Amino acid sequence: MTTELNTTALAVFVFFFVLVTVMGFVATHWRRPKTLAHIDEWGLGGRSFGIWITWFLVGGDFYTAYTVIAVPALVYTVGAYGFFALPYTIIVYPFVFMVMPLLWQRAKDFGYVTAGDVVHGQFGSRGLELAVAVTGVIATMPYIALQLVGMTAALKALGLHGEVPLAIAFIVLALYTYSAGLRAPALIAFVKDIMIYIVVIAAVALIPSKLGGYANVFAAADAAFQAKGSGSLLLQPNQYVAYATLALGSALAAFMYPHTLTGIFASNSGNTIRKNAALLPAYTLLLGLLALLGYMGHAAGLKLDNANDVVPALFQTLFPSWFAGFAFAAIAIGALVPAAVMSIGASNLFTRNFWKAYVNPQVTDAGEAKVAKVTSLVVKVGALLVILFLPTQFALDLQLLGGVWILQTFPALVFGLYTNWFRAPGLIAGWFVGFVGGTLFVWINGLKPLQPVTIGETSFTVYIGLLALALNVIVAVIVNVLIPAKVTARA
Image (cartoon, rainbow, N blue to C red):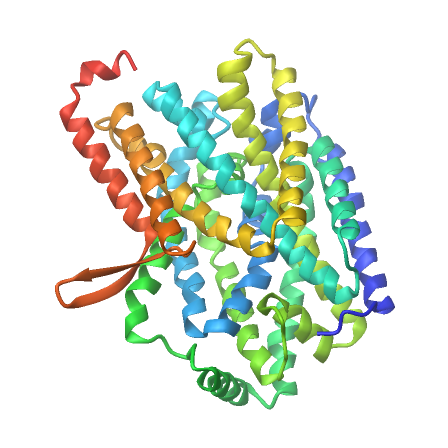
């Protein structure tokens, strides 16, 4: 991939980046309430977003810049195994349809802003609340950093190198998020998603015609996998269980993250969430089309030092400079929306479940909003430092581990919506075993989220997040049975 400065592409990129920057600051006046000095208004947009705003916002923070970069890169590297993201995004929406309206109603009725608030309200345990909040924050940090990985790939293709362009982009993001809160990424998400759709439709419509058709694309990818002795167009039998468990575990974890829950809590009704669960699978189609770009990279004969460059390299090689600049702008803007929502979600957790719980229980509404704003800046700076001072692979590995971690909040957050049988001591014990056990499994396997399992003569590989979740639930049940209910009353 050429990394020399392309002035035409850069001009188009700058135009769209300036456009969304202006929109970010204009968002301060969009659907403006009486005051933004309230965490409900700054961090949840006043809980007023309807069907279309929620659709763009949730889609914008669920399908991120790193998705645009990472899914095709994985398919480029390993083939069919990289398509696990498709069944995962199919499984997740029935879950959203059934569970998230109940969670939204609980949050609306009691004024909850975060998952930690919901857990504390249900179980009355500061310890369990803190466990859920800390897990959310640490699982989100590398996720934000990975948005910068996607942006870095686009900037490199434009010929912009070094830390300065990336730092400028994130400083701009930090400023308009500070001033407008969730309204900024919600407004920008409209532009971001339309741009991504244009880019993907153009790619799948035009690239195959330039490469001899889809038959040639698949044949070239198959030949490339055979030549290097790894990867395949079809799943191998030893990949079935790993593929299925990775898809299921990812689906259960997806809406446990603070940024996806922020989009849910910002909705104006449970019915809005149900309708979005029916509409959001349109993004799954988009994801499937994106994944095919990995195969197209082989057909185009790209020679890459880093698989993350496959999408930028395709646009740089096969499209005119102006459209390449448009595509790179879509990728970069696709990083800004989720990064903003992620930082808001993490700052809401810190404000409500640490600052208010332990530092200043009497904090005013305006004080809460101020703490959340400042924390959102700190979170962005922390993510930027991860990218600047750690190799990218560390951020990726931490994000894989983050999925294992956030899945351990599932019992505390979801079980309480349906039953009062579980109590805080059991859920804390289960969270601890799942969190520590999952971390150890991932560490032992070289920071890979898959664990080989042998039962008799049968061997298969399982997603560690599901194994840790199973341990979590088993321990929670055992402790719940062994500890009398009256102990919980004093928890």
